[in-house]
Image 1: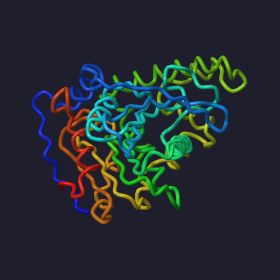
Image 2: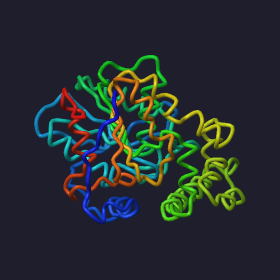
Image 3: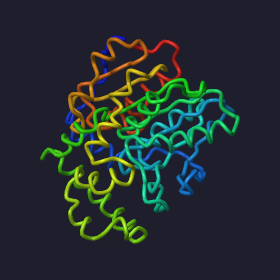
Image 4: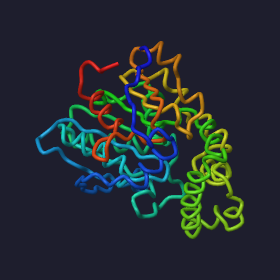
Length: 323
């Protein structure tokens, strides 16, 4: 499928990557969206929370929304996508990863960019309701990588899963870690690190045999966090083993359903390998759009409707997607 020629042209100052990223994350008014929480108990006894929103009319379609690193279902990008989809005939299941819904999770492990078994548990929970004939997956940043890996690593997926959208997705995790380590990304890097270290500190009380103050002091970068916590907690040798085994770039060739990837050219979180131009040109079901602007999940059109939100609806609902 040829790479999509993007028509996204934001107004100044949203052409600036950092302005669009920070404004969208911190200053965009939260779109109104009613949510109803369901707690899902997982096979290992831990839990995660799903925040549901419902279409005004009875529907047999549901979109599972997946947030980014240290996000949750309350983020404006989740509510923005949920609002437009629910207004157009979709029920919404906004997934909160373990430890991301405002309550610390119970297990030593939590979530990561490739932990697809928890996504599978959410999908199975929805299928058991016997209400939905069509399921779409919509992921942002880490959530985009998560859903693409899920779709590409399994020999079969449920027939109900029809399409998927991945927005501002770090398809190559090592490259994105290196990008976030650059000086110009210090604001985002420090914010992520502060939140992750706080969670480590809280979890340390419950798992003193595996986590300790000495290791906490060593966490001065995202790489060190992944070496000290993410990798050992989830069964990987080290951070680089984790990055290599969970980068959705390697699973993308095996995906059979239609997927839409929207990655801005000026996204400072992404490296060159996060733009799989050759693969998208060869595979009929991979739609890749690379707008010049947009930053990281910052595709501003208006506070009420972002470009990624309108494009997501178009891709999920139109038989013929505009390219």
